[in-house]
Structures are given as C-alpha cells and as structure tokens.
Image 1 (tube, rainbow, N blue to C red):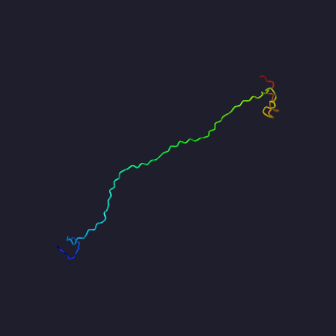
Image 2: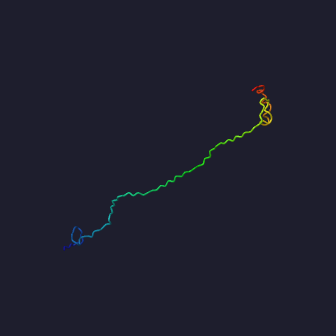
Image 3: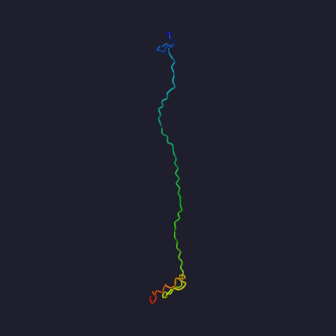
Length: 104
C-alpha cells in the first residue's frame, strides 16, 4: 500500500486514505403534474311563485226608479205651485204666450 506524506490530499489520488466522504444534499423534487377533470355539481334551486294581486276597478251600477206625478196644464200661463219648489212657477215662466192659442 502506498502512503503519502500528506494524508488526505484529495487531489486525484486513488488511495483509500486520500478519498473524502461524499456530501449528500437533500433531494430536489421535480413535479410533472397532470390534471383529470372531475365534475362538481352546483344546484341552483328556482322557486316559481304565482301571486294573485287584487286591483280595485270601479264598476258603475245605476238604479232606476219610477214615480208618477200629476200632469200639468201645458196651456196654462205658469207651471203651478208645488212643481219644482218655490219660485219655479213664478212670473216669467210660462207666461210668454208660446202655448197660448196653439192647437195640437
């Protein structure tokens, strides 16, 4: 066996005493990712609401009544008392002579 003066020289010497121990570094990881699709269901519930709204719409009803009143003399000068209230049959109404002397 060959011995050197300087132990552990490490300069390419192949002797057992000149070899150094290797330093092992932590591993470096290289990832080669692939992807696979997976469906995830999203449920969107829809609620249909039927609303009935009340809207007021006017509807007109008419009632009819019938009454009988005593007739008037169309040839008289005035309408007479009691027809239409006070002042209606006073002077100026019916005295124009329009109906006077006419025949129908």
